[in-house]
Image 1: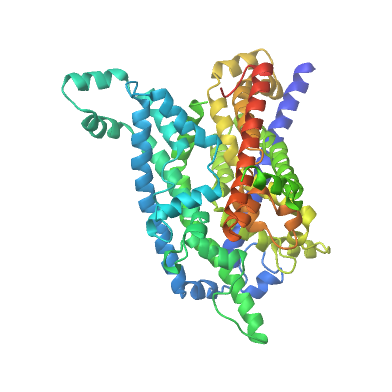
Image 2: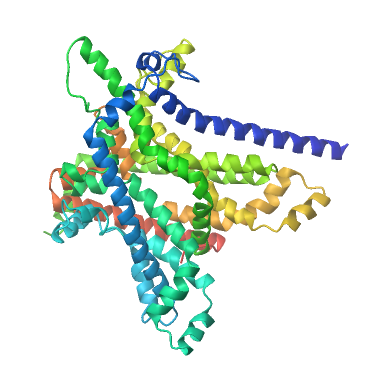
Length: 295
Length: 247
């Protein structure tokens, strides 16, 4: 009797778990699906609630108008350049710093470690940071997006943990006996062993760069340097029309067209990451696990 | 100079408002956002169908990669009282839908629950990682002893993730006045400002929009000092009571 009750309770729990899982998946996927179908639907259908599962009338004016904007192309290219250059610089800085920190023979190792850990809990503050960046002459330059914020305590510590746990001390000793210097050892022995950590730190940095806008907001004035996310702010948040002003019935038409452009801009800015991510998921998972080890 | 700037902030009308709003958003986020990922990980860990489990994980992690900008755009579009998805849904059911973004009392719910939607899955990864190190033999032995699913969760899984959970709780408590600037700033508007002005948005406006560098820096420093004190306090209490701590 007791046994039967236990099994039926287990079955009930399992069914409950699967029901919750299915509800969660729908709650996540439906809004994303809605954005995609809204971006290719007639704007009247979207505004009047006639759009639910599939587009009634396909209408791609949103994309046409959006891609006709020179600003979109410019900011898209800017974001790609910021992402590529920023990721390369961040990899060079964080991986080499992490490796140096992992070496037991680093002078003042403890002190350097504390020096890196403090900024994780105590920030310098907005204005002091702004003034430092300004005094370095970074204001309104391309480099402000890729240099001042390249080093990340978190990534350095994750890299350090990775090297500490995966590079045996004896490897360095053996290389040293064979007359191999630190730089050559790093380039020829360590780098080939660190594909996992390169992928983890690289992907994190790339996603953060692609999505960042605040630094551009405070440090960049030049329209030509604007990243995609800041242009999205004008489309999505401050609701500026990229199409100019109009009156009367034209105004209504223009407002609907702007709404279509909102959906289209969300799709073109987010789709690259959404498509790539499932293939790269194992590296993101791995990153969280390497990071968790440090605890 | 002295403490003039600190005193000016402490005596200003904005002091009480920004502290209150920051604490409300922060504590609400912890109360909801801390236990839910643990529950999700415990649930996900029990799923026996490998394929469904993988699909479930990929899908729940997905929204994490949406940028804050796009997320806030989505919130504003979906909550629009005239043409938003929620308004259309309400109309279908014959109800009217209020202008939530203009309702200052609703701001905290919008902020916290949209965050849950976006990050719940991702925040559970770390617990799943901890659970993946449980030896399968424990489960097998407990099955032979007649343990139910809930008993396995209670006596095997929960003790396993407790240290991780404590560390994350300490870290979150240390950031109690460090609520995400970007999202609050982007969701702010004139109608909801009474509950959406937090310390970091105020520091930004005073410092970089009004150019009152000293005052802004003083407020920022005050924020940092409070954070460090709270972090050390929670760390101390955790060390005394559970023997788990950051340092």
